[in-house]
Structures are given as C-alpha cells and as structure tokens.
Image (cartoon, rainbow, N blue to C red; front, side, top):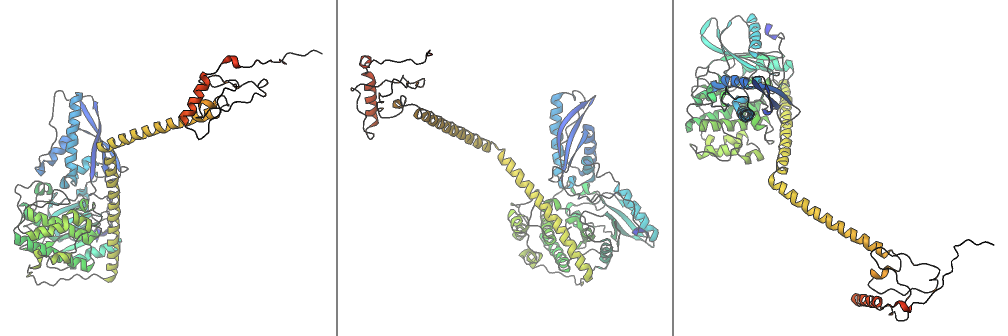
Length: 576
C-alpha cells in the first residue's frame, strides 16, 4: 500500500497538553510602535523557556482569530494618540499580561493551535493540514473506492489530528469520517506492533464501542475511517452544538448551560463504565475518555478514538490529572476522566477547577456521591475508585442494559505482552512528570512562605534577638578580658581588683628592684607600710569589710613615716 511508504514530515514528538505560561519581562519603544518582550515557559522547568517579541498588533490579530469562541477576552483597547507615553505603555503592559493569563489558563484556548503558534512559533511552524492531505492522497492512490467530500476544519481540539468527510463512490449517500493523526510522545510500541494493533481495531465488536470501518498506520502517523454521525457526540448533545462546527465555536462559550436528565445520566454513565471495564479486562490501554469522544447512536453511547493511546497521543485532561500523584495508572486516568464527564452531563459545563469540594444542586444525591468519590481533594489524596466499585454505586447499579450484542475483541498473546509493556511506559512517563510537578509545587510553596510578610516580620524579630544576644555576649567577653588583664598585673595593682587587702611587700631588696609601673587608671604603687598597716584580713571575711580596710589604709597613709634610703648609682663608667 502506498500509504505505508514513509512520507516527508517535520515530526516533533512534543506533548501539546503541557501548559505554556507567558510573562511580559519588558517593553521597548521603536519609532512609532512598542514591542513587548515575553518569556514563555513549557511546564515547570525554567530551563524549558524562551523569549518572543510581540507588538500590540500581534495581540490584536490573535484576539480577532479567537473571536470564533464568542468569549469576551480582556484585550486592552486600541489608542491612536498618546500611545507612546511611558505611563500608557506601563498600563497597557499590565492589560496584556492579564490577557495572556486568561488565554494560557483556559483549558480549551490554551490547547488550540492559534495560541500555541503565538507563544511557540518554532514548535508549531508545520502546516499539519498539508501533511494530512499528503497522507490521504497517498492512501487514495491504492484505495480508489474512497472519495473526499470536504475537509472538516478544526472540529477537533488536537493540533496534529485532521478530519475529512468522505464517501464510498458506489454508495454516494453514505457518509464516513476520516481522521489522520501524527504520532505522539507516548508512542512506545514498535512500528510492527503499532501497525498490527491499529489494524486489529476494525475487528473489535462491542455494543458501546463505535465501529471502525478501516484503520492503518505507518512509522509516523495513522489513518482511521469510521461512519459519520449527524447527531454528533455526547458533548454536542450537552452543548446543543452542530457536529461540523469548529471546536472553539461549539464548546468554549455555550449559549445555554443545561445538564441532562437524570435517566440519561444514569444510562449513559452505566454504558461508559461497562466499556471501560471491558477494555481494562482485555489489558487494552485507553486514557482518552471525554464527552467529545463518546458518539451517540440513538440512546446508546459508543466510545471513540481507541487508536489514540496506541499512537501515543496525550489525553485531553492530562494537565489536570498530572497534578495528582495518586492518579498514576491508566485505569485511574479513565476513572478521573469519567468524573469530568459525569460532572459535564450533570451541570452542562466542565468544572471550573479541580479538585471540586463543593457541588451545586444535582438531580440526585447519588450523582453527588459518585462525583465526591472522584473529584474531591480527599479522592485525589486517597486515589481513584475502580470501575467495578463505581458500577456498584446506587446511581448505576439499578440501570438495566437492553443491548444483547456479544463483545468481541481478540488480542493475540504476543501483542498483549507488548501492550502491557507499552502501558507501563506510559504510566512511567506520567509518574515522572507528576514527580517534577510535585517538587516544583513544594519549592514554590516554600518560596512563597519565605517571602510572606508574616515570615519577614518573624525573621526581623529573630535577627534583633540574635543581635542583642551577640552584643551581650561580646560585652561579657570584654569584661572578662579586662578582669584577666588586671589580675595578671604586678602586686601593686592587685589590691584594686581583689576583695581583700594586699599583703605588705617585704622591705628586703626594695632598694635594688624598682617597683613596676601601674596601669594608667590605677594609683601609684605604695611603698612598704609601717607597723600601722592593718593585718591582712581573713580570706573568708566579708568583701565590703575588706574594701573598707583598704580604703582606710590609703586614707591614713603618712609620707613622714617613710624611711630614708640611700641609693648607690653604679651606672657611671669606672676608670681604674
């Protein structure tokens, strides 16, 4: 088959669901316009970031393209006069930052090709519509019975997946839908196993799986043909949308928000859980459940896009469940995604944030009970319930299924082993990503706490206490040094630092050894005292009494009582 030939494609195995964040770092005025320097980052790693330069006209062009969503986006208005003033540029920069924050945090807008190309033009420069047409053209060379009716432009959310409305030449009234998809970052099957597994999908028969007419794959992409439903998907039913309209137009801003009837919620929920249980028992990884992947056939829900996991495509809700480390298996991912779908069926819109700890009034308390077991903070900490456990809950346990079609999906043993390894690789990448996000969250939390006003006050108080303690210890050390220097002096200075009176020095040798000079603040050393000098007090006596005796001795000192001495000077030279 010509499709199996390797086509030219600028392939980049990039996870398009990893959120992009954008921060305006600076602005610069050039002639008659202002340029804004923006730092864009993919995921939590600061190393995976780059700079882009955008003008206001670029923002305006993007905003015009996003008007198809009918959302009211906060782009600052144009200004023709005074738009180069410094104050105006600073105010506009704040407004543009608010605009970037909105489009990068909105789940649908942040994943659309328009926003991705605006923030990351290098990674999204390839025209995937042209590449898809190349593959489809090669396919038609070997399969002339098919014919393209029209391209279904942007009906899906994926950038690297394109859709075409088709027909069979000898059955012109029957409409089919062809989807072409590039391979994704979780493509862990060998080319041989991938091609075999994709072809096997057309043999799968289950009352709640949408039939695949034809499927094939090569080493870079896959092509799948299935019947086209005019009724559209479960998401089209909830949002009252037309299946052929662009994804942004259908689902970004619904005109009327209204959930389904309780019986519809119970029946559709039970059918979806039954097919998830079937796939889990077969060891077939899915991980792509959301309301736009559930086709309606009368009152029956049928699962779409089983090929997505085989091609390594990331899940629509990956940016949600990658935040919680307990959702680390594909079975847990399916249950978490089912929680999103059940919320959407109940309230007519997706949840604003995850986790959800407070639910609006629902048609039944049993609905809230199921939602609480999946979407609350406690559920995120404890892990997801199993599909079997959900089937036993009151909301679904009493639903009678009338379809008697026997499920059939035979997977050879060798392929089962390959799928098992493949599933483990997908879960390993998810776990590693969750670990990085967890570490980043802890670091951010610590930095935020460290930089809080309360923490700054605590650090200031501790610093003052430490400063006072250091000053006190320094003063004590200085006093000790001063005391030691006094105690280590001559006998003449010891009376002022000792609590007792000095022992009178011996008169012997006084004529030959001059007394040591006292330190500056001390009085001169006294010569030997007469017999009137009081006797040295007992060392055990009171300190105050000893000091009194010392003062009395000094006060009663009389110069006349000193004996005259004769000094012999031997310093002059002797001449013999």
